[in-house]
Each structure stands twice: as C-alpha cells, then as structure tokens.
Length: 112
Image 1: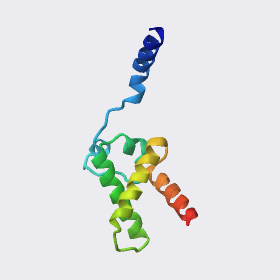
Image 2 (image 1 turned 60 degrees about the horizontal axis):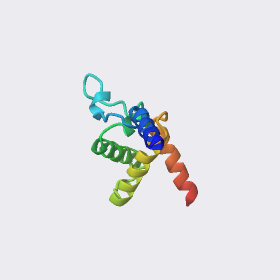
Image 3 (image 1 turned 60 degrees about the vertical axis):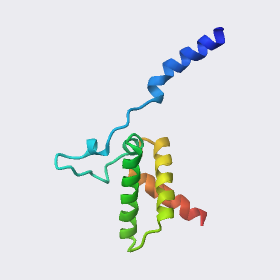
C-alpha cells in the first residue's frame, strides 16, 4: 500500500512538468502576423500544435531547398525530415530551429 501511495504522490508531483499547454504558432507572430523564422526556438516548435509544427517544418524544407536551388519536392522525404526535426526539438528546447536543422542535415550527410 505504501508503494502505491508513493507512486501516486510522485506521479502527481511530476505532472506539472510533464504536461505543457500547446500554443498556436500565431502567438509568436509580430503585430502584422509575421513569424521571425530565424528566431524561433525548438521549444516553440515542440510546444505548438502538431499541425502547426508540420506546416512550419514543411516551410523550412522549402526554404532550404530554395537556397540550394532545388525546385522539386520529395513528399515522403519532407515528411520524414519534419518528423526528425520535431523529435530533435522536443529533446533540445534551447536550440533555435535553424540550428537544429543544420545539425540534422550535417548528421544525415555524415551518414552518406
């Protein structure tokens, strides 16, 4: 009985740390509704709604492909990359998203 009570107590004490409210990306927009893409953090990506995170990750994919002069979309690869970005950001809240993307791209290039 003491073990169950201890487990329940620990669970309730940890609950505020485990549960974070999701916020829409629009909360981070300026007064004109624009997001500063280079300033967004992994914490902001990880704590937004899944559909917002996917939309933003897809935007970043297009941005990076445009910088590389690539004018095509590999949808399964984009989906995989966005998932990898979200997973990375959930574990690395202090990074900026663009830093996380650079790390992921370098890691994937090293695997080749």
